Structures are given as C-alpha cells and as structure tokens.
Length: 93
Ligand SMILES: [Zn+2]
Image (cartoon, rainbow, N blue to C red; front, side, top):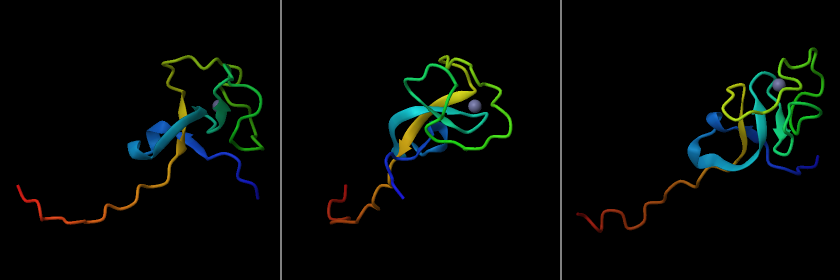
C-alpha cells in the first residue's frame, strides 16, 4: 500500500491545532476532495468514493468562494505531544 499524500479532511471537522496545509476542496454533498487547481466540481476527486451510484448534485458546479456546499480540505496533522510537566510549580507567581 502506498501512502503518497496526507489524507485531507474538511477544515471544520478538524481541531484547529491539527489543521495542516490546504490540500483541496471538500464537497459536503458527496464527501469527495477535489484539487485546488480544479475550479469546478468535475472529473476525478483526489479522495472520494470510486463507485458513486448517482452523480453529485454539484457535479459541474464552480467552486465559488462563500458557497456553503464546499469548504477547504486540509491535511490532518498528528496530534500534538502531550505537554510534559517540567519544573512545574518552581516558578510560582
Ligand atoms: Zn460533490
């Protein structure tokens, strides 16, 4: 199994501290991620289901800023390491 690119996820579902670089555009209707250079919801998504019974209702639509049917898809960063208590309490206010 090859792992070429980090999985992209809709920004609103990822905790702020785990949002990486924007990878593409996530369609809320069909759950597929399209490349940033694609101005329209068409062709093959970067991530998405291979077999879709019916075409997405937004197939062929332009990704217009401000539309709520899509949102930026961001790379999911690994969770930050737990903060280790180091010298805690030595510098009391
Ligand atoms: Zn779609």
